[in-house]
Image (cartoon, rainbow, N blue to C red; front, side):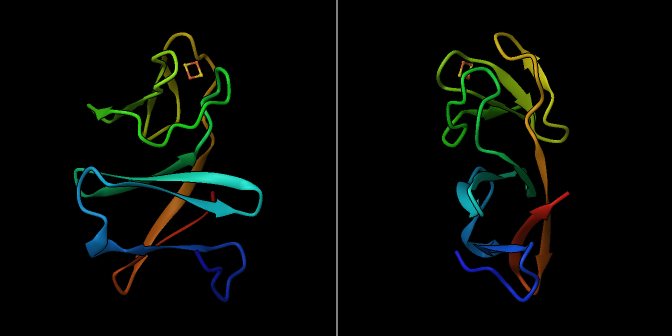
Length: 108
Ligand code: FES
């Protein structure tokens, strides 16, 4: 994924290629950021479970929450908050923007 003129902003891809339920991960420097389309809204979270650092990419999304596949912790996409054990700390959130049909993420 390329970095745009604003070096803080990373291009994720075309909105039309990321339908409802789509998940992908992009690199922001050394950080992996998970981007999820849940019911037409894009969310971006650090792609690391706060329990044992397992990637969140590929976890089941339901009721606005993503489930870590390792031990089942759930995180709220909107806030990053841990909603079930064994995770207790929130996942860092990133900002998503859509411009001319292209989805971008940047630090909040
Ligand atoms: S690593 Fe995610 S719940 Fe344990």
